[in-house]
Image (cartoon, rainbow, N blue to C red; front, side):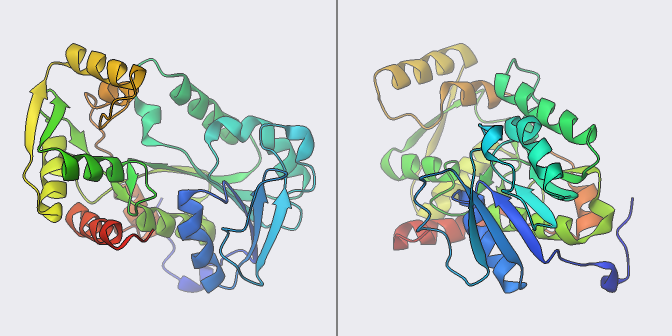
Length: 303
């Protein structure tokens, strides 16, 4: 389905409920909603410190626990749409409250990890959440980002950058030949905003990643170059690499990736972003540009 050509057909909802409002993506999304004059209903667990939320007269904090559906009725009241950033596994439990409060549209951030062929309870839960959306009357849009990066809060590239800053050797299963397609957080936010306002996005799922896939070794070398540090990509067979990650976790020794991530590093994370380009005007920045900015933020101590 192609996007509408008449920009007047694009209409941002006046009020948007945001789950996962204290998280990394929300910290970049909420100010962009304010810029568009959107009233934000930020959902937070009861008792949660919400002082870090970006302040604005357009902000209203709502309390509810997505893991406890009984706490949710009324939490979404008044919203025309919802942006769900808190995990697709929570969708089946929250949908009755969303629909019961009169919300009829939403953008749901899933993950490209749903395509894994490995056994994964997390991927299964995300798939179940997507199925619940497809079976609902909601005008949903699902975005499946690849590895999200962009600021020292990203929990992905920042770990790699800090490792390279300390050590000149980067162990990598299979020598880092598998493809990665990291997406900058602000490009993901742009896709969320476009999904909120473009009719073409209704009841569609989109892969969102960087402009092109890169071998992991090129990702590592680009990070090292922007840091001004030498790095040697050390090829490791899969089984020893996985055992090393397990031992590192057990003995709390620094290691650049978690054990489950070692296994995922053997799977291509290349995604097809052409539908997002067509329907959402998605135009992601290069990895080199994005990681250069993140390195600058890391050195400046900003997030």
